[in-house]
Every structure is written in structure tokens, then in C-alpha cells.
Image 1 (tube, helix red, strand yellow):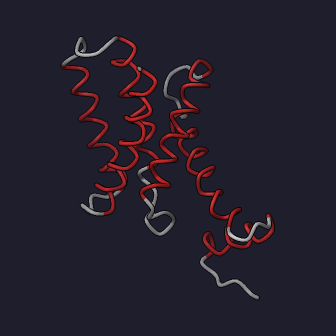
Image 2 (tube, rainbow, N blue to C red):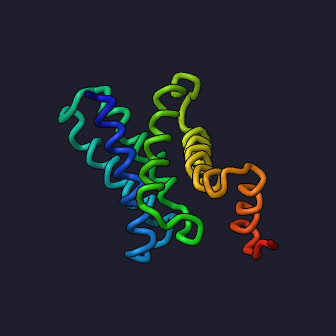
Amino acid sequence: MSVLILFIVSFAAAISTFYVNEHLKQGPVRSSAFLSLTIAIFFFLFPKLLSPYLTTNIPVVFIGSSFIGMVSARLVSNYFLIGAAGLVFCTVYLNTSSFFNGYGGALGTSAAISLLAVLSLPILKASGKFTNGFHLLRKIVFNRKLRK
């Protein structure tokens, strides 16, 4: 049950950060910081509300998933993909958290890996050819038109 709660938190954190970033026009850093600070203060003030495992891990998972929500709408504007990246982040976090000692850069790196993994799915699916996926990626990154 605890793992399911972490997946829900991860999904909600990525989507809510993106919403505050893009629709409320607060910017990526302010959106992530405000929401993460709110969650951290809540669990600091009410540490016995949930189990010690959840009290420890919910803020960390929320912070990491909020990094995913910082993505630009020019790159991703689909809430489903952002939520899916949050779920991938939670999976990565649950399976590799024993290798990370502290925050350091592990949360941001895991969030970037999760977002890139989800972003690669539509690119590879576009025509079924791997090379066409790279052309689409170049178009996204360099904002150029493809030659046919």
C-alpha cells in the first residue's frame, strides 16, 4: 500500500508542478520550490500522521517528481506523458534509492532519465523506424524542419 501511495504522489507532483508552471505562470523553479516546500513543511509539522516510511519518502519522491514538472511546454504539453514520467521516476527511485546517499544530484538525474525515457516513446513510435526517431528528436531540439 505504501508503494502505491508513493506512485500516486509521484504522478500528482509532476502534473501539479507543470500546471503551476505553465497555467499559473509561476515559472519552473518557483513552481517546484513552492510545492516542494509546502509538502516538506506539512510532513515536518505532522510527522506522525502517516507511517515513518511514508513520512520519510513522500517529500523526497515529491521533490524528485516536481523536477519533471519543470519541463517546458514547448517540449511536452501532454499531461499524460508528464504523469507517466512521474511514475517512471518513482520506479527508478524505489529500485535505486539504496545506491544514493542523500540528495546530491540523484533526484535531478533520475528525473531527467525518467523524462527522457518517456519522451523517447512517441519519437520511436512515430514511424516505427529508429533513424526517423532521431530526425524527429533533432527537429525538437534544434527547431528545424525535416527534409523529405
